[in-house]
Amino acid sequence: MRWQLFWVAFCNSHQHVACKCHSMASQIISKTITTPGLLSRFNLHPDPLCRVCNEINDISHILLRCQKYASVRVTLWRKLNIASTNITYDVLLSHVLVNKNQLLIFVQTLKYFDID
Image 1: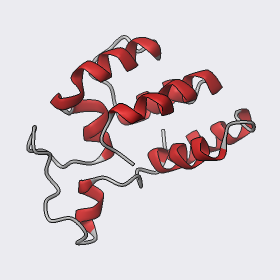
Image 2: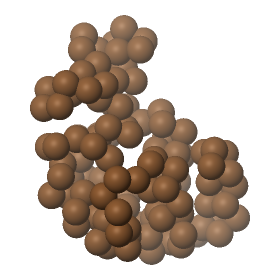
Image 3: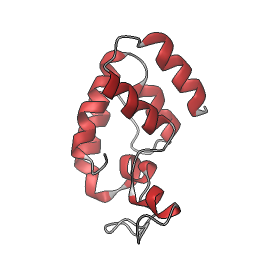
Image 4: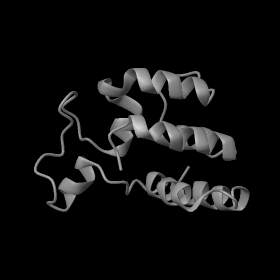
């Protein structure tokens, strides 16, 4: 599912979520949140690779695959009721955007990941 569809669903059902939460959610949905992988595309970061995994250090890698965040991911998956450890970015978003509580859990957990 494309991020635009998620954003429409989010806006229609989460009108009372705080502005910062909206901003963070929109950056995550559109994959424009600041990461070394994104910054390197614009020559603003010298190395797009994750120091731990040696993969492109973008938001998908950080949230879904990075070994550095394995324990955080286990806790987040449990809180979001995600059973599989091997999911896509769109599946993660579909769990996050189910309701306001899921979104807030997700946004609050982001502080444990190295993203802005």
